[in-house]
Amino acid sequence: MMSTSGVDRSAIEQIVRQIVLRQAGGSTTIPTSTGSSELVVSISARHCHLTDEHVETLFGPGHTLTPKKDLYQDGFYAAEETVMVVGPRKRMLPSMRILGPTRPRSQVEVAFTDAISLGIKAPVKHSGEIDGTPGCVLVGPRGVVELNEGVIRAARHVHMNLRDCDRCGVSNGDYMKLRIESPACTMVMEDLLVRADDAIKLEVHIDTDEGNACYLDGATKVELLKQESCSCEKSH
Image 1 (cartoon, helix red, strand yellow):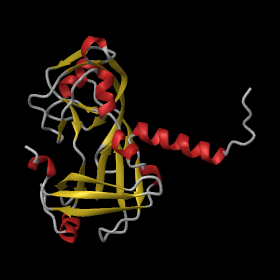
Image 2: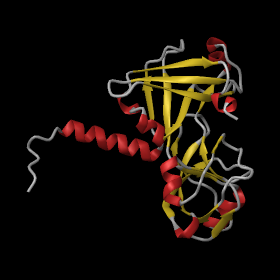
Image 3: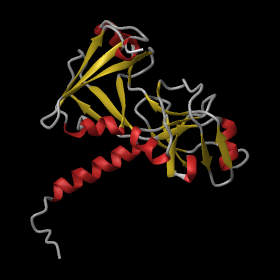
Image 4: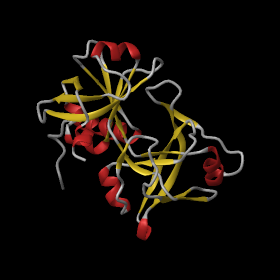
């Protein structure tokens, strides 16, 4: 029988908290050198966005999403509802959270390891750019939706209001680099698309694989740096 007398309970609680945050799409606030007081870096766990029509197909006529948890950006939320996502050869993710509000087109966002689990070669795309992407089947308690396209690995990006853009010398559609400093793994992520809006709050979105790779939970400092061009474009 394993002894637990030497276990650090606070360390266990920290690990559990990190897992729960990651599953819910948690955020980490750490010091930044962008000129603002703080930068929220959010790990965007796998999730989907649905149209009103698909919500009703999956959950019943007249059904609307039920907010469960507000996200960092005002007006956005994680819904109570989840769906099963089925890929080729019946490989599946049994419970994927739906984010609201609804959108004009349904979309499933996964990390690389999620795509492997589904057996889908999901391309890296910016949110909403789903033309020609792989599809999947969504299963809800009242129905099934077959998506002909819409499964992507969401490209990392940064939401910025216009004041932050002016401070950093960037505009909507530009690219930035994110430097994450931590005792275990200091690294730089390139090609963060700037998505600017005057009503938005400063926030970086990366997926779970990226959050694990940079050990975001242990980060002590981040820097948003201007990037002259997108390296992914230069490689084409």
